[in-house]
Length: 238
Image 1 (cartoon, rainbow, N blue to C red):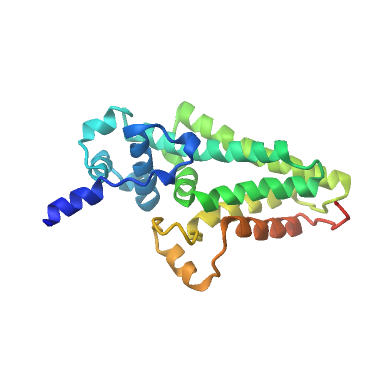
Image 2 (tube, rainbow, N blue to C red):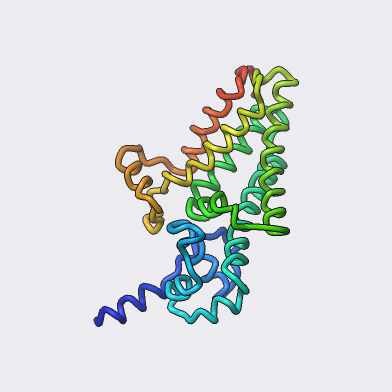
């Protein structure tokens, strides 16, 4: 097969599993968003051009502009998808959780960590290069992130009030919790997700030294770390 043909076929391949199903538009729009996730995660906002996106999809640049008037608008959409998915998962976990503070926190943190393990490339885009956003785009994303922080903070403070937690610096604890989840995306790759390619090789290094955890196992371990961090007093919560 001629090299040019092979490159063209490779360029046209888009992995639709890079986005949650509920956030994946049909057809070319969905392919564009998934391509944007992969390239922005690998190169950052400034390292990707509209021509790069078009070349990766094996289409013309006009096909990209048919969906988004600018690269910034496309980037904003991907960042929004990431932060909206986090908000959905945290809210769903909160609604389904046991009212006991420790179990509530465990369920919410489990949902948070699992998102970063399930969609590491999307999470990478969702947490980086946010300085390129401005105006309503920045406000929307900032509000989603603020709400996520406030949700976790409220659980920690409630646990303090009930005596289930002994966390004298809840704001610092929540900042550490957020960082733990975000960092998952930089190194964790599920055993069956070989299509995820790390931007800096760190995930490949970690894969050589870490046991093969499933996303659920990873979330359970992180939940234990978080409960220790907030000074959980292990009462009988059965």
